[in-house]
Length: 357
Image (cartoon, rainbow, N blue to C red; front, side, top):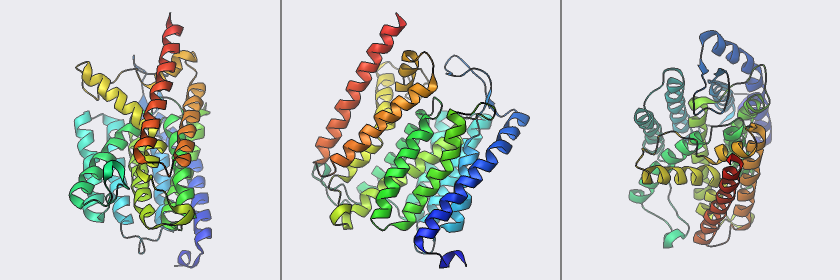
């Protein structure tokens, strides 16, 4: 009751502080529990790490986000929030089950689909406008629902697939949350700004222990990566939807293309891999070491921090391109993203191959 009397700015500030404090203070207990219960990732031929490392760091992100979001978000004014939370919980449970017991990619995707369906069917949350992309403006639910379903499931897996080296998934998610959160706040969408802020500060403690930690180092695991991908997808769709009604600084004519720019690194790297695997007659989910981050690890002699910060710099460049091209035609901005990514990957790949010789 008392929290409902707080101003929006106070709610935003306190919710982020609480998420940060929870994440920071539970990281060590979660690490100790993982070691005690042997919830660890053991290195194999595909691993980029040595030694057994706890793989349930997603619990830190999940609990920090859940507690702060439940306490400070106004569910009575944002009807879809309860379904967002329910979908996030379902997807987290699928992820933690996979981290602990390992399930087939097919079963995992089915679980992700269930979480997405809860959001779409229960919350009535789906894409309703393409802002002129391919000549389409407002679209019917018959098109918006399938696009939302495929887009969310695809992004969940794209975010999960970039979680291959220290700090990469959490770093990209941090940057994207800041972008969406600042825009939502500036346009008066306080509840979504709060969601972005809480997720960002829930991720922040994990980012530092994953990238810089020595004694309490953990991996995010599927439990964290899948949930983060789900929430980033929701932010992206809301970004496209809110733009319809905005004017002035909040008007973004090429909203779908801006979203594509913000998420370009995980989306384009995943699409490239899926197409490459399909052309080689392999399952799209067949693991390998052909990701962008694997190429950079070769260049930097296996140093994760250098590879991570290089990709985060690329990610920042794509975000800035999205901001610069927010009034361009959607097709032009997306084409620029594809060409730039293809060029970057080609250069990185050539350097990595030269290093191996």
